[in-house]
Image (tube, rainbow, N blue to C red; front, side):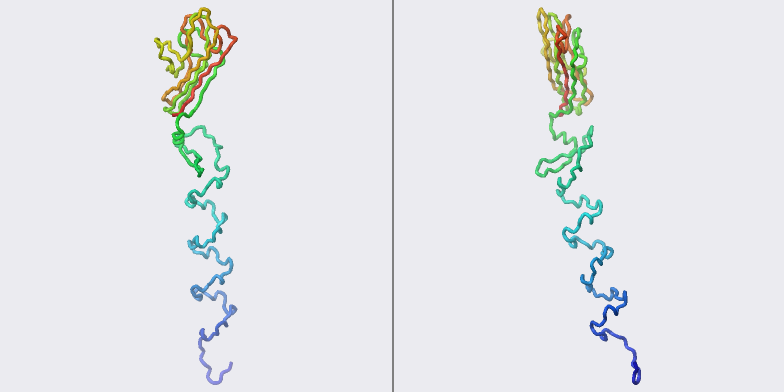
Length: 297
């Protein structure tokens, strides 16, 4: 524009020279507004586009539980193995949180050690699963429990003409107690008979190895004391078959393999000792057995 007279000196435009509200967004160059041009607390939520703030714009450790809406964190927001035991409240996990196949008995153990852990179910109202060592479980179970059973059954006949005591073929069993405090319950059941002779003095005794157990001490002659048997005197002989049973609780105090057996006996120069048949005929038969059970202390 033209001037009359001297041209005025150029002067800077100050904020007072600009009318309020006349500078529009079109008058601002791109990237011209810097953080220094924004007043503190000048940016409100209305000035921020939806989804405009990314995780890169959030400082570490600034999001606390008060910033999270209740129920907003779902399983997709949790990383694998992110929840540790320290983050689970006491008594928070109950049986409905366990998969039906999570705890199984599919792995069968043939033996366990005293310090092995087992799961037990509490019978109280909580019905919680608890762990206990095998040794503590046995100790709390109390005594009188059967630990193992070994038995043998003899159905065929046996005979002997020897005087004194003799082994009966097929009437022995072996057992290895699990503890020195265990006892062994010995049960023998025999069908005894003898051939015709005037004095019937036949019997049997039970032995652990070479040690006689459960025998009488009433006889004047210790060599004639039995676990069981009979003595008959008759001039015509007998044709009977007698059942003889013996139950004895042995205390071997051992964890080694133990053999229990039955010996028969006959003290008469004549006649024959028979097991599982009548003395005067083989037409009638019986059966005999010996059973041992470990009784836990």
